[in-house]
Image 1 (spheres, rainbow, N blue to C red):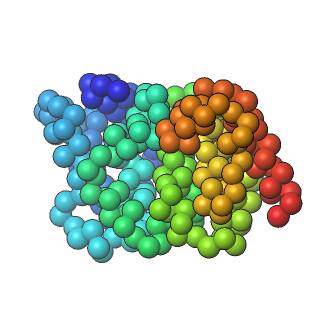
Image 2 (cartoon, rainbow, N blue to C red):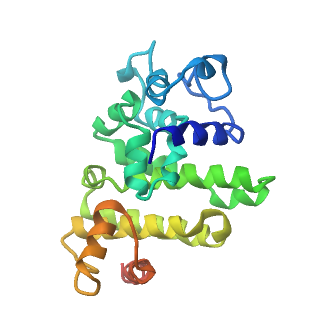
Length: 242
């Protein structure tokens, strides 16, 4: 994805930004401000998003994630062929996210924030733009939770409990498929596959072409919709048996 596209995406989502959160630090320079408009490159705008004026170590792990979720480029992963690479590009060098990933309780914090969210609230949103911004924000959190290092912060029992809660959230989101779309199913299937791998269980290796599996497992690119369907069916089966 070209960097110029980040300009457009950030400005697009600025018009449907979520309500201000009670955070001890928020972005003083963001789309719609004079400061932001005065910057002329993506690199300058990424630098303007760095957390400054507060010691990162004084911010809780939850605060670091919530701040990351409000990053002006956070939702721009959707414009990339690979949402994983897109999110990495959007948050490249962001000190708040880097500090979050260093925390030993990063996955615990992500789960606490994610599983408290009631996805059925989309019913009350006034328009599709707000619905889209909302869904992309929470799918972005799912992408973060798919990180191997974060998944490995959980024990085997915690992984099983995590999958049960993730499946329950999936069922709610699937009631609003027009809002969350196929990318939600794909990311959830990806997380399930990653957790299974971390427990030494292989799901799809013998049933699909090798290049298709590699594209999915390394870049979250699903060339065969049957792969997502299989993983979600296996996910449901796993939850029923555990």
